[in-house]
Length: 426
Image (cartoon, rainbow, N blue to C red; front, side, top):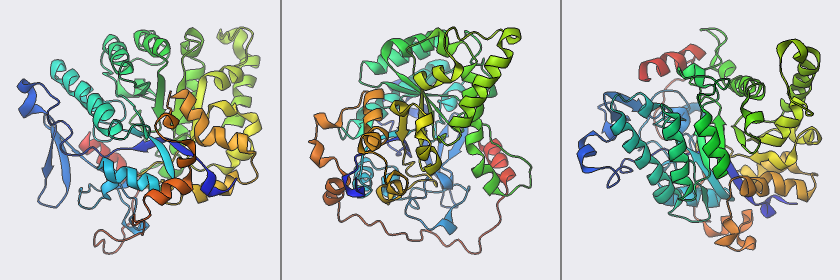
Protein backbone atom coordinates (compact mmCIF):
# COMPACT_ATOMS: atom_id res chain seq x y z
CA UNK A 1 0.00 0.00 0.00
CA UNK A 2 1.14 3.52 -0.82
CA UNK A 3 0.64 6.66 1.28
CA UNK A 4 -1.91 8.07 -1.16
CA UNK A 5 -4.07 4.94 -0.80
CA UNK A 6 -4.38 5.11 2.98
CA UNK A 7 -7.69 5.89 4.70
CA UNK A 8 -6.89 7.70 7.94
CA UNK A 9 -9.19 8.12 10.94
CA UNK A 10 -7.58 9.81 13.92
CA UNK A 11 -8.93 9.00 17.38
CA UNK A 12 -6.96 11.78 19.05
CA UNK A 13 -7.12 15.37 17.89
CA UNK A 14 -8.09 18.50 19.80
CA UNK A 15 -10.39 21.46 19.37
CA UNK A 16 -9.58 24.98 20.48
CA UNK A 17 -13.10 26.09 21.23
CA UNK A 18 -14.30 29.17 19.30
CA UNK A 19 -15.44 32.25 21.19
CA UNK A 20 -19.08 31.97 20.06
CA UNK A 21 -19.61 28.33 21.03
CA UNK A 22 -22.12 29.07 23.84
CA UNK A 23 -24.18 31.57 21.84
CA UNK A 24 -27.81 30.45 21.82
CA UNK A 25 -27.04 27.27 23.78
CA UNK A 26 -27.51 28.31 27.41
CA UNK A 27 -30.70 29.14 29.32
CA UNK A 28 -31.49 32.87 29.41
CA UNK A 29 -30.81 33.06 33.16
CA UNK A 30 -27.19 32.03 32.56
CA UNK A 31 -26.51 34.31 29.59
CA UNK A 32 -24.26 36.67 31.55
CA UNK A 33 -22.48 33.83 33.37
CA UNK A 34 -21.57 31.65 30.41
CA UNK A 35 -17.85 31.29 29.60
CA UNK A 36 -16.56 34.10 27.40
CA UNK A 37 -13.34 35.18 25.75
CA UNK A 38 -11.35 38.14 27.10
CA UNK A 39 -8.66 39.75 24.97
CA UNK A 40 -5.82 40.90 27.22
CA UNK A 41 -3.65 43.96 26.77
CA UNK A 42 -0.67 41.70 26.04
CA UNK A 43 -2.50 40.33 23.00
CA UNK A 44 -3.43 36.95 24.49
CA UNK A 45 -6.93 35.52 24.61
CA UNK A 46 -8.28 33.76 27.71
CA UNK A 47 -11.58 32.19 28.66
CA UNK A 48 -13.30 33.70 31.69
CA UNK A 49 -15.78 31.71 33.76
CA UNK A 50 -16.87 32.19 37.36
CA UNK A 51 -13.64 33.90 38.35
CA UNK A 52 -11.43 31.44 36.46
CA UNK A 53 -9.18 32.70 33.67
CA UNK A 54 -8.17 29.86 31.35
CA UNK A 55 -5.60 30.53 28.61
CA UNK A 56 -4.89 28.46 25.54
CA UNK A 57 -1.38 27.16 26.15
CA UNK A 58 0.93 27.65 23.21
CA UNK A 59 1.85 23.96 22.82
CA UNK A 60 -1.84 23.17 22.28
CA UNK A 61 -2.08 25.00 18.96
CA UNK A 62 1.20 25.07 17.07
CA UNK A 63 0.48 23.45 13.70
CA UNK A 64 1.84 25.55 10.87
CA UNK A 65 4.37 27.33 13.08
CA UNK A 66 8.15 26.80 13.26
CA UNK A 67 9.33 24.71 16.25
CA UNK A 68 11.29 27.63 17.67
CA UNK A 69 7.94 29.32 18.38
CA UNK A 70 6.66 26.44 20.50
CA UNK A 71 6.21 27.22 24.18
CA UNK A 72 3.96 26.99 27.20
CA UNK A 73 2.97 30.65 27.40
CA UNK A 74 -0.63 31.71 26.65
CA UNK A 75 -1.48 32.47 23.05
CA UNK A 76 -4.21 34.17 21.02
CA UNK A 77 -6.61 33.14 18.29
CA UNK A 78 -4.75 35.48 15.95
CA UNK A 79 -1.54 33.50 16.42
CA UNK A 80 -3.22 30.16 15.77
CA UNK A 81 -3.90 28.49 12.50
CA UNK A 82 -7.62 28.93 11.81
CA UNK A 83 -8.12 25.17 11.63
CA UNK A 84 -7.56 25.02 15.38
CA UNK A 85 -10.94 26.65 16.09
CA UNK A 86 -12.82 27.09 12.80
CA UNK A 87 -14.66 23.94 11.75
CA UNK A 88 -14.57 24.76 8.04
CA UNK A 89 -10.83 25.39 8.08
CA UNK A 90 -10.35 22.29 10.23
CA UNK A 91 -11.90 20.12 7.53
CA UNK A 92 -9.74 21.78 4.89
CA UNK A 93 -6.66 21.08 7.03
CA UNK A 94 -7.81 17.47 7.46
CA UNK A 95 -8.15 17.17 3.69
CA UNK A 96 -4.71 18.64 3.13
CA UNK A 97 -3.34 16.07 5.56
CA UNK A 98 -5.28 13.24 3.93
CA UNK A 99 -7.25 12.57 7.14
CA UNK A 100 -10.82 11.40 6.71
CA UNK A 101 -12.10 11.29 10.29
CA UNK A 102 -11.23 12.88 13.60
CA UNK A 103 -12.16 12.67 17.26
CA UNK A 104 -11.44 15.92 19.09
CA UNK A 105 -10.68 16.25 22.79
CA UNK A 106 -11.61 19.48 24.61
CA UNK A 107 -9.23 22.26 25.57
CA UNK A 108 -10.29 25.05 27.92
CA UNK A 109 -12.73 22.94 29.97
CA UNK A 110 -9.91 20.37 30.50
CA UNK A 111 -9.96 16.72 29.55
CA UNK A 112 -12.85 15.60 31.75
CA UNK A 113 -14.65 18.86 32.36
CA UNK A 114 -12.72 19.79 35.50
CA UNK A 115 -13.63 23.44 34.93
CA UNK A 116 -17.31 22.72 35.51
CA UNK A 117 -16.57 20.30 38.35
CA UNK A 118 -14.92 23.20 40.21
CA UNK A 119 -18.00 25.40 39.75
CA UNK A 120 -19.86 25.90 43.04
CA UNK A 121 -23.27 26.39 41.44
CA UNK A 122 -23.88 22.88 40.13
CA UNK A 123 -27.09 23.87 38.35
CA UNK A 124 -25.03 26.32 36.33
CA UNK A 125 -22.29 23.72 35.90
CA UNK A 126 -24.51 21.00 34.44
CA UNK A 127 -26.23 23.43 32.07
CA UNK A 128 -22.84 24.67 30.81
CA UNK A 129 -21.57 21.11 30.43
CA UNK A 130 -24.63 20.04 28.46
CA UNK A 131 -24.33 23.15 26.30
CA UNK A 132 -20.69 22.23 25.64
CA UNK A 133 -21.59 18.68 24.62
CA UNK A 134 -24.45 19.87 22.42
CA UNK A 135 -22.16 22.36 20.69
CA UNK A 136 -19.54 19.67 20.14
CA UNK A 137 -21.99 17.11 18.77
CA UNK A 138 -24.26 19.40 16.76
CA UNK A 139 -22.08 22.32 15.64
CA UNK A 140 -18.54 20.92 15.55
CA UNK A 141 -19.15 17.32 14.50
CA UNK A 142 -22.55 17.92 12.93
CA UNK A 143 -21.28 20.55 10.51
CA UNK A 144 -19.62 17.84 8.42
CA UNK A 145 -21.36 14.46 8.78
CA UNK A 146 -19.02 11.54 8.33
CA UNK A 147 -15.91 13.50 9.25
CA UNK A 148 -15.95 13.55 13.05
CA UNK A 149 -16.41 11.11 15.93
CA UNK A 150 -18.34 12.88 18.72
CA UNK A 151 -16.72 12.89 22.17
CA UNK A 152 -18.55 14.12 25.28
CA UNK A 153 -17.26 15.47 28.60
CA UNK A 154 -18.76 14.09 31.85
CA UNK A 155 -20.17 15.83 34.94
CA UNK A 156 -17.45 14.12 36.94
CA UNK A 157 -18.77 15.42 40.28
CA UNK A 158 -21.81 13.08 40.20
CA UNK A 159 -21.70 9.51 38.80
CA UNK A 160 -25.49 9.41 38.43
CA UNK A 161 -25.38 12.60 36.37
CA UNK A 162 -22.49 11.11 34.39
CA UNK A 163 -24.61 8.09 33.55
CA UNK A 164 -27.53 10.31 32.56
CA UNK A 165 -25.31 12.41 30.29
CA UNK A 166 -23.80 9.31 28.66
CA UNK A 167 -27.32 8.16 27.80
CA UNK A 168 -28.46 11.62 26.69
CA UNK A 169 -25.61 12.11 24.22
CA UNK A 170 -25.75 8.49 23.05
CA UNK A 171 -29.24 9.28 21.78
CA UNK A 172 -27.58 12.01 19.73
CA UNK A 173 -25.09 9.53 18.24
CA UNK A 174 -22.18 10.13 20.61
CA UNK A 175 -20.55 6.91 21.80
CA UNK A 176 -17.31 8.21 23.32
CA UNK A 177 -16.67 10.05 26.58
CA UNK A 178 -13.46 11.45 27.99
CA UNK A 179 -12.55 10.58 31.59
CA UNK A 180 -9.50 10.74 33.87
CA UNK A 181 -6.54 8.37 33.71
CA UNK A 182 -6.38 8.68 37.51
CA UNK A 183 -9.44 10.27 39.14
CA UNK A 184 -7.89 10.01 42.61
CA UNK A 185 -5.32 12.61 41.55
CA UNK A 186 -8.23 14.97 40.92
CA UNK A 187 -9.62 14.38 44.40
CA UNK A 188 -12.21 11.78 43.43
CA UNK A 189 -12.43 8.05 44.30
CA UNK A 190 -10.13 5.72 42.39
CA UNK A 191 -10.89 2.94 39.90
CA UNK A 192 -10.83 0.56 42.86
CA UNK A 193 -13.97 2.09 44.35
CA UNK A 194 -17.57 1.33 43.36
CA UNK A 195 -18.19 5.10 43.26
CA UNK A 196 -18.17 5.16 39.45
CA UNK A 197 -20.44 2.15 38.91
CA UNK A 198 -23.43 4.11 37.50
CA UNK A 199 -21.07 5.64 34.93
CA UNK A 200 -19.45 2.32 33.95
CA UNK A 201 -22.89 0.72 33.68
CA UNK A 202 -24.21 3.40 31.35
CA UNK A 203 -21.10 3.25 29.16
CA UNK A 204 -21.32 -0.53 28.89
CA UNK A 205 -25.03 -0.49 28.07
CA UNK A 206 -24.73 2.32 25.51
CA UNK A 207 -21.58 0.95 23.86
CA UNK A 208 -19.74 4.14 24.83
CA UNK A 209 -15.93 3.98 24.79
CA UNK A 210 -14.29 5.66 27.80
CA UNK A 211 -11.24 7.61 26.60
CA UNK A 212 -8.43 8.17 29.11
CA UNK A 213 -6.05 10.73 27.62
CA UNK A 214 -2.52 11.25 28.90
CA UNK A 215 -2.55 14.28 31.19
CA UNK A 216 -6.21 13.83 32.15
CA UNK A 217 -5.17 13.33 35.77
CA UNK A 218 -3.71 16.88 35.75
CA UNK A 219 -0.46 15.25 36.88
CA UNK A 220 2.87 15.74 35.16
CA UNK A 221 5.81 13.35 35.09
CA UNK A 222 8.37 15.81 36.46
CA UNK A 223 11.54 14.14 37.72
CA UNK A 224 13.15 17.28 39.15
CA UNK A 225 12.29 21.01 39.15
CA UNK A 226 15.38 21.81 37.10
CA UNK A 227 14.95 18.96 34.61
CA UNK A 228 14.78 20.18 31.01
CA UNK A 229 11.34 20.22 29.44
CA UNK A 230 12.42 17.38 27.14
CA UNK A 231 12.27 15.02 30.13
CA UNK A 232 8.63 15.86 30.80
CA UNK A 233 7.64 15.41 27.16
CA UNK A 234 9.52 12.11 26.88
CA UNK A 235 7.86 10.75 30.02
CA UNK A 236 4.29 11.77 29.20
CA UNK A 237 3.22 8.16 28.45
CA UNK A 238 4.34 7.11 31.95
CA UNK A 239 1.03 8.31 33.36
CA UNK A 240 -0.91 6.10 30.94
CA UNK A 241 1.24 3.08 31.83
CA UNK A 242 0.44 3.66 35.49
CA UNK A 243 -3.21 4.03 34.50
CA UNK A 244 -3.13 0.71 32.62
CA UNK A 245 -1.84 -1.16 35.68
CA UNK A 246 -4.25 0.63 38.01
CA UNK A 247 -7.21 -0.12 35.78
CA UNK A 248 -6.25 -3.70 34.99
CA UNK A 249 -5.95 -4.74 38.64
CA UNK A 250 -9.10 -2.83 39.62
CA UNK A 251 -12.53 -4.56 39.52
CA UNK A 252 -13.73 -2.43 36.58
CA UNK A 253 -12.83 -4.58 33.57
CA UNK A 254 -13.93 -7.82 35.20
CA UNK A 255 -17.14 -6.33 36.57
CA UNK A 256 -18.11 -4.83 33.21
CA UNK A 257 -17.02 -7.35 30.56
CA UNK A 258 -18.48 -5.38 27.64
CA UNK A 259 -16.95 -2.04 28.64
CA UNK A 260 -14.24 -0.68 26.33
CA UNK A 261 -11.62 1.81 27.50
CA UNK A 262 -9.17 3.67 25.26
CA UNK A 263 -5.71 4.75 26.39
CA UNK A 264 -5.51 7.91 24.30
CA UNK A 265 -2.14 9.16 23.08
CA UNK A 266 -0.39 6.55 25.22
CA UNK A 267 1.53 4.80 22.46
CA UNK A 268 1.84 1.04 21.98
CA UNK A 269 5.57 0.21 22.09
CA UNK A 270 5.52 -0.35 25.87
CA UNK A 271 2.61 -2.82 25.81
CA UNK A 272 4.41 -6.13 25.09
CA UNK A 273 6.67 -5.81 28.12
CA UNK A 274 3.81 -4.49 30.26
CA UNK A 275 1.67 -7.53 29.43
CA UNK A 276 4.54 -9.87 30.18
CA UNK A 277 5.09 -8.14 33.50
CA UNK A 278 1.45 -8.14 34.68
CA UNK A 279 1.11 -11.84 33.90
CA UNK A 280 4.30 -12.57 35.84
CA UNK A 281 3.07 -10.52 38.80
CA UNK A 282 -0.32 -12.23 38.75
CA UNK A 283 1.04 -15.75 38.52
CA UNK A 284 3.59 -15.17 41.28
CA UNK A 285 1.53 -13.13 43.71
CA UNK A 286 -2.23 -13.54 43.24
CA UNK A 287 -2.59 -16.19 45.94
CA UNK A 288 -1.63 -13.71 48.65
CA UNK A 289 -2.81 -10.45 47.00
CA UNK A 290 -6.27 -11.87 46.33
CA UNK A 291 -6.44 -11.03 42.62
CA UNK A 292 -8.69 -13.35 40.62
CA UNK A 293 -8.91 -13.25 36.84
CA UNK A 294 -10.70 -16.60 36.68
CA UNK A 295 -9.60 -18.63 33.67
CA UNK A 296 -7.93 -15.62 32.04
CA UNK A 297 -4.60 -13.87 32.46
CA UNK A 298 -4.36 -10.10 32.98
CA UNK A 299 -2.81 -9.80 29.51
CA UNK A 300 -5.84 -11.49 27.95
CA UNK A 301 -8.24 -9.12 29.71
CA UNK A 302 -6.16 -6.15 28.58
CA UNK A 303 -6.09 -7.28 24.96
CA UNK A 304 -9.82 -7.93 24.92
CA UNK A 305 -11.06 -4.76 26.65
CA UNK A 306 -8.48 -2.01 26.11
CA UNK A 307 -8.23 0.15 23.00
CA UNK A 308 -4.68 1.34 22.43
CA UNK A 309 -3.76 4.42 20.42
CA UNK A 310 -0.56 5.87 18.97
CA UNK A 311 0.74 8.75 16.86
CA UNK A 312 4.14 7.51 15.72
CA UNK A 313 5.34 4.19 17.11
CA UNK A 314 7.45 2.13 14.73
CA UNK A 315 8.56 -0.22 17.52
CA UNK A 316 4.96 -0.94 18.48
CA UNK A 317 3.93 -1.66 14.90
CA UNK A 318 6.95 -3.92 14.40
CA UNK A 319 5.86 -5.91 17.47
CA UNK A 320 2.16 -5.94 16.63
CA UNK A 321 2.04 -9.74 16.95
CA UNK A 322 2.14 -9.22 20.73
CA UNK A 323 -0.87 -6.88 20.63
CA UNK A 324 -4.55 -7.34 19.91
CA UNK A 325 -4.50 -5.67 16.52
CA UNK A 326 -8.29 -5.32 16.42
CA UNK A 327 -7.99 -2.76 19.24
CA UNK A 328 -5.13 -0.61 17.92
CA UNK A 329 -5.97 2.84 16.52
CA UNK A 330 -4.02 5.64 14.85
CA UNK A 331 -3.82 9.28 15.96
CA UNK A 332 -2.76 12.59 14.40
CA UNK A 333 -2.90 14.91 17.47
CA UNK A 334 -3.80 18.06 15.47
CA UNK A 335 -3.09 20.86 16.47
CA UNK A 336 -0.76 19.89 19.35
CA UNK A 337 3.01 19.95 19.24
CA UNK A 338 3.29 16.18 18.64
CA UNK A 339 1.02 16.35 15.58
CA UNK A 340 2.15 14.84 12.29
CA UNK A 341 0.18 17.43 10.25
CA UNK A 342 0.52 18.07 7.31
CA UNK A 343 2.58 14.95 6.46
CA UNK A 344 0.72 12.27 8.42
CA UNK A 345 0.42 9.79 5.51
CA UNK A 346 4.09 9.98 4.60
CA UNK A 347 5.17 9.69 8.24
CA UNK A 348 2.81 6.75 8.80
CA UNK A 349 4.20 4.89 5.80
CA UNK A 350 7.66 4.93 7.36
CA UNK A 351 6.44 2.30 9.83
CA UNK A 352 3.56 0.81 7.81
CA UNK A 353 5.68 -0.07 4.79
CA UNK A 354 5.75 -3.84 4.42
CA UNK A 355 2.84 -4.35 6.82
CA UNK A 356 0.03 -6.41 5.24
CA UNK A 357 -2.78 -4.26 3.84
CA UNK A 358 -5.31 -5.97 6.11
CA UNK A 359 -3.32 -4.89 9.18
CA UNK A 360 -2.81 -1.39 7.82
CA UNK A 361 -6.53 -0.97 7.28
CA UNK A 362 -7.31 -2.09 10.83
CA UNK A 363 -4.85 0.36 12.35
CA UNK A 364 -5.65 3.35 10.16
CA UNK A 365 -9.45 3.28 10.07
CA UNK A 366 -11.34 0.00 10.41
CA UNK A 367 -10.84 -0.39 14.17
CA UNK A 368 -11.81 3.21 14.87
CA UNK A 369 -14.94 2.89 12.74
CA UNK A 370 -16.06 -0.27 14.52
CA UNK A 371 -15.14 0.71 18.07
CA UNK A 372 -16.60 4.23 17.92
CA UNK A 373 -19.60 3.40 15.71
CA UNK A 374 -18.29 5.72 13.00
CA UNK A 375 -19.36 5.16 9.41
CA UNK A 376 -17.92 7.76 7.03
CA UNK A 377 -18.71 5.55 4.04
CA UNK A 378 -22.41 6.21 4.67
CA UNK A 379 -21.92 9.80 3.52
CA UNK A 380 -19.03 9.48 1.06
CA UNK A 381 -17.94 6.70 -1.30
CA UNK A 382 -14.92 4.78 -0.09
CA UNK A 383 -12.86 5.77 -3.12
CA UNK A 384 -13.26 9.43 -2.10
CA UNK A 385 -11.95 8.75 1.41
CA UNK A 386 -8.34 8.07 0.51
CA UNK A 387 -5.43 10.41 1.13
CA UNK A 388 -5.15 11.29 -2.55
CA UNK A 389 -8.88 11.97 -2.95
CA UNK A 390 -9.06 14.21 0.12
CA UNK A 391 -5.95 16.17 -0.78
CA UNK A 392 -7.39 16.81 -4.22
CA UNK A 393 -10.38 18.51 -2.57
CA UNK A 394 -8.23 21.08 -0.76
CA UNK A 395 -5.21 21.47 -2.97
CA UNK A 396 -5.21 25.22 -2.33
CA UNK A 397 -4.58 24.88 1.43
CA UNK A 398 -1.32 26.53 2.44
CA UNK A 399 0.58 24.00 4.56
CA UNK A 400 3.82 25.96 4.71
CA UNK A 401 5.48 26.57 8.06
CA UNK A 402 5.61 30.27 8.83
CA UNK A 403 6.30 32.45 11.87
CA UNK A 404 3.36 34.02 13.66
CA UNK A 405 5.20 36.11 16.22
CA UNK A 406 8.54 37.74 16.90
CA UNK A 407 9.93 35.32 19.44
CA UNK A 408 13.34 36.87 19.93
CA UNK A 409 16.00 34.69 21.51
CA UNK A 410 14.61 31.29 22.58
CA UNK A 411 14.64 30.80 26.36
CA UNK A 412 15.38 27.58 28.20
CA UNK A 413 12.21 26.06 29.60
CA UNK A 414 12.32 23.69 32.56
CA UNK A 415 9.80 21.01 33.46
CA UNK A 416 8.80 22.92 36.59
CA UNK A 417 7.76 25.90 34.48
CA UNK A 418 4.71 24.02 33.21
CA UNK A 419 3.90 22.89 36.75
CA UNK A 420 3.97 26.50 37.95
CA UNK A 421 1.93 27.62 34.96
CA UNK A 422 -0.69 24.90 35.58
CA UNK A 423 -0.93 25.77 39.27
CA UNK A 424 -1.34 29.47 38.48
CA UNK A 425 -4.12 28.82 35.98
CA UNK A 426 -5.84 25.84 37.63
